[in-house]
Image 1 (cartoon, rainbow over the protein chains, first blue to last red):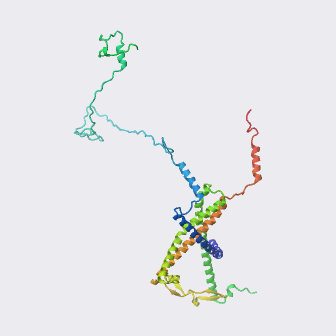
Image 2 (image 1 turned 180 degrees about the horizontal axis):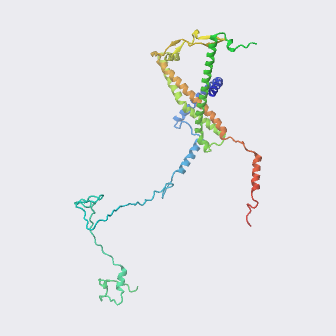
Image 3 (image 1 turned 45 degrees about the vertical axis):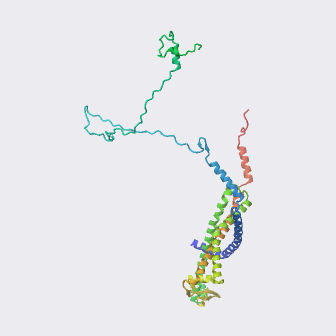
Length: 183
Length: 229
């Protein structure tokens, strides 16, 4: 009932307000029609001169600059260590592999029946028992082992060892080894 | 003095019936007007919110720092927005004018009754029939349903009216909505100019502030602030 009376009262008010509202609407419409034609003319002239239809306002320009600066500041920068602000890739985690082995106590002398295959164990092909890729054969190449200089000096500086007396342990002829006496 | 009931003042039953009909009619009219007004208010309020979108960035980033600048900026934005929103309405109007000029130029019917032709698509009643009007205390009131004049029917010759009248109606409605939205945004702009830069002294008292400052000063310990010797 209250709502009904309120609507009724508002209706009484709008009986007087509606003509005024319509008058305001009509006057604004006439003004805006002229405004629209003016703006349309300006828009077309600017457009055909190659500019944007409406000139960017100074306030809009400043807002755009502020927003661009903020966006630039928030953008992650590329550095030598990666992208700044980006989370590093997680380190590889150690994986635990559980291998279950079951052992059963059997009586002494027990032999499994012929053809018995433990459950879970893969069948082995007797023709190709290990189906693995072939490893290419690389022939062994013997490389000369360099003689350490220290060993040579030790051999020549041995007490009582004369060159050519056959006491040197190294089988090379000692005459060919040059030893600096000054040292 | 004998009290005379109000209804007894009315001459006969027909007058009473007329009075009741008139009251019901007025109540319905006022109710409808009330609902219409409320709808206008609601749509105006909703349309005005677009102005906040337009002003938001410039005000939030403190690019606009005084009411005069805000008013100038808001008006320019409002006019440009109106240019865009009224474009469909005026585009439809432009098309309809081109059609009208083409049709009238081809047929030579420059003063055709387009609205009358379009009304053939609706029921029409003979409102001039005197039998449906009555005189009630000097007022001429509608007292009955007027006789039906015609039912909806299509006339091939009126094709231009069937095309032009809906286009005109559409453009007028769209343009009126655009104007209403422009007014709504202008009203909100003026409200924002006062609310964004409004300074309020509500709850402020000069002496209360002074007293509070002196109380704080008195509450400070005396040795505080002195450097140890």
